[in-house]
Length: 315
Image (cartoon, rainbow, N blue to C red; front, side):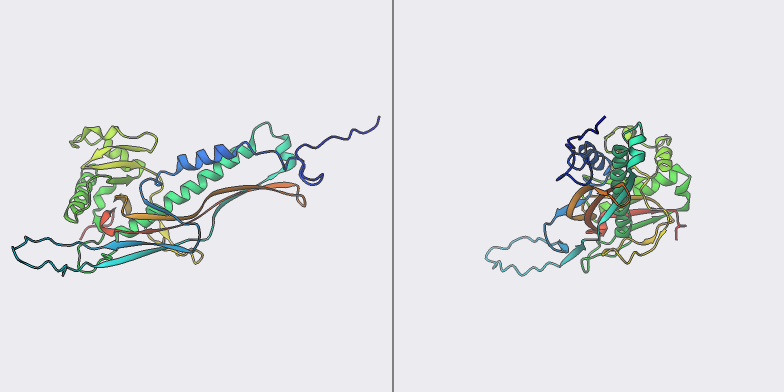
């Protein structure tokens, strides 16, 4: 019997991968997974650029006011301190995997789609982790505006690890620090780990009983002292060394970090390229390479809008 000559509808120019022209069905799933996992994306300042290696955010100090006297010349003599924060674009943040074509053919599940979801989740998780690291660094920073009380806040109490009353006290102390630095009450967030979240839920002294309410999609509960509670596993908890490849500062000793209070003005992201996904065929090894990447950079803007709750013993 003569061999059949199949028309390879997925092959480009009669050579190479026989599936090259078939659209990957997981791309929409990838985008949905990526955005759905990015808990921090709407809780920070965002700026998108199309060219260049960095972007700057202006910072202004505060100005005073006075009563006007009749006949007095208004000459605009008042001055204001100004500074700026520059956030660089880091190297690509990538997530990749290789799928051997024969094993893919043998598999009874949609392995490539599952892998794509995991890769998207890995990028989203890394972004959230980095943003929370930056938030803690903001809380430890001095004021970026000269002669103004606009530095970050670190609240230390070793009892906050297991004592919910001490933890609640620390949250209220963060609120006082924000109030004293004129941080807006709207949009205050407290990121805590699952253990501390559970401790708060079981504390019967909390006056605000709506802690169980909030946005399920964003993982945010109701408020304590105007702080919406964000339960997350992405708070830093170890000593993170400097990475020479990145262009911004994300490293520090986070072994005592228990929680982070912040507002949207504390942290910023600059994006040069959003999520990009590619699937390439390697005929030398008969496998598909799945590569997904983003080009971003992160930094802090207003340290006064961040407070770290630390398990380090108080002074």
